[in-house]
Image (cartoon, rainbow, N blue to C red; front, side):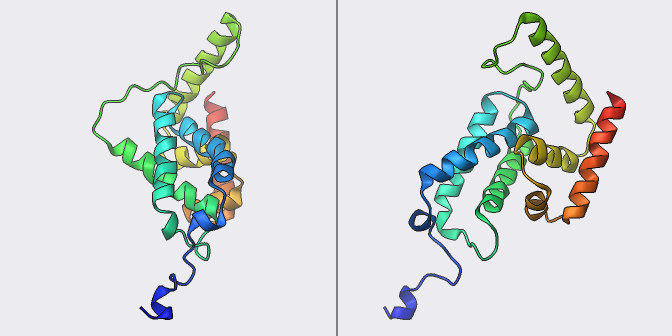
Length: 175
């Protein structure tokens, strides 16, 4: 084998050489988890899909190319594919978007109001197109800025901002 054959592909980066996976996990976990939580509601599916995303990223780490996308963008591309596969699956899933998170410490009255608000928001957002649900999940679930959302979705940054503003205005008017 020549020295030329032994070189990795131009721009291909083995993540385990460049990144501390413990730090990557700690940094990306809350955003990926919240993306799924906003997209699907709280529940076991969220944890399963988050784990599946990190597993796929780990297995595909040699395919990551930093010249094509930032690491966070790459991770969210994987997460978007995971949620798309999940939504397309034939398995019957119980939607738990109307349930309060069991870790929250609330009075019974606050829990009832919170549950009612979540149910109302779930009902209103159920009518939104899938693209709009995804934008809301990336913005408010994953707490990403418009520039990163634009990179992930392939939309312009201006389009992301305008669309999000219209979605929020629509939801407020229906509230």
